[in-house]
Length: 371
Ligand SMILES: [Zn+2]
View 1 (cartoon, rainbow, N blue to C red):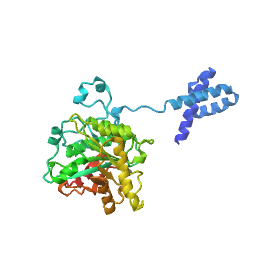
View 2: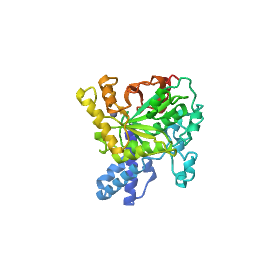
View 3: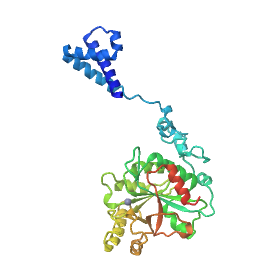
View 4: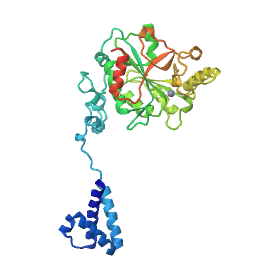
């Protein structure tokens, strides 16, 4: 039915164009009757000027295709679909930068997933460590969760490994509201009791060395003073879509205002082969050689290894080889959380951050922590 109606409208417009080009008088009664228009067009078509008709026809196509999309006002969109809103409240390092005040920002102050909750801070802002810790709930039995990310992308995602920036930011808001974000290098001190936790803690890790860790994650975490560890595959460094050595060195060398190193580089093997499929004799080489290559390029010791696909977790020969190579720990892909006193550094569990909605992952992390 719709096709016929559209066809009738087309006929009407076609006739209008034809009349316009041929300067024939328009008879209103004729136009009002679709049937008559059809009839008239078919009758006139036989006798009409063909080139003129062609011009009229293509004009009509342009007219129709050019008017199809009517922009929808942003304020009529549901909240979740709203484009990035106006600038967020100024943060200390923005106040002195007038260009930033004008720039559109994705730092929404009304996070759709967090509406109606009681969290005092619903947005990502620059805060001192004291402010951050003061806001996080105190725990008598604090736990530690290691988060396993891969890529962070802006816009549409191509798979579960690609976490979109919007949800990634929500993750950070949740983690800073509910946990203290620490570095993986804190683990030995927490295990020994040299450092104590009063809140749950989280550790950010990113696997594979995707270029987005430099282009997207590095600037964001720098700005909000958040620690992270990047596990890289040495054979992939500098290839298309992956970070190069200069970028890794820049990340590793970065120090915050307090002179603290925020980003550490770990090994994720030479070539990302599964450790349960390569010959056993190859494993010590994968561990030692990848560590050596990274250290040689960034000039900083590498302490942690992440198993490709988590394969071979808990296997004694892998753990022994890792210890012999000088690693302080192995991050697996096994799901779980830790308590400071029971950290097993060579069998570290994770929570895998797929491209799921931030509120759903937040709930899962919270229940994994037992809260
Ligand atoms: Zn991997």
